[in-house]
Amino acid sequence: MADSQFTSTALGAIRLAQQNAARLGHSYVGSEHLLLGLAGQEFSPAAMALRRAGADSQALRSAIAQRVGTGVPAQSSFQGLTPNCCMAIQGAVEESRRLGQHAVNSEHLLLGLLRAKGSGAARLLAHCGVDNDELYRSVCASLGGEEFYYSAYAKNLPSKALALSCGFVYWHSEQKTDERNGNLYVLETYKKTLKPSEDGECDAG
Image 1 (cartoon, rainbow, N blue to C red):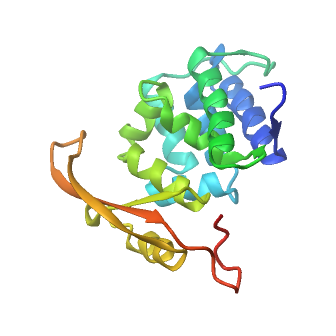
Image 2 (cartoon, one colour; image 1 turned 60 degrees about the vertical axis):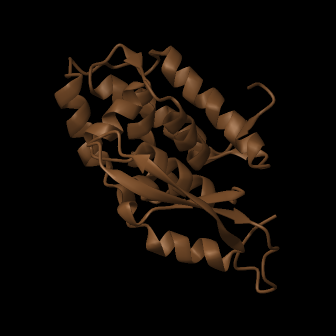
């Protein structure tokens, strides 16, 4: 990760993760603290995506206290990062490269967390009722990924309309199962085939 550049927003989220762990009296900085750090940056794209999915900073903090517990707040914020937290940050670097973006931003950190299926952050989001796979696809699409996924079950019709306006076209559908409740739903895949329009509204490559 030494050759990767992190934006001030991404670095701020990591600092917030350390501070949140200290305030909660935890002796480590886990993926759940990084998630809370992202949610705490109220106007960042990652925080807004989390709020839309139903996981704002207050809900996440309450869920952490309920699931993990709290200790005596610490004065220092230099706790070590857990393997899952390190894996999420490395995943963010990989996501930024995959999407052809030179700097790691808050959205890439969120994608890195969403990739870590068995992490504390993933369990925390599931506790808040978030569909991690759907959130991953939505954030990818917002960053200019080559594929977009839509399901009426997830009620992300505005995102579908934006994707279509940015040159995505229908590719295929498949039946999926919601791991939270066993319900079946149809997932539509759209692929980008067109260049962005002249007005520059869609930053597609």
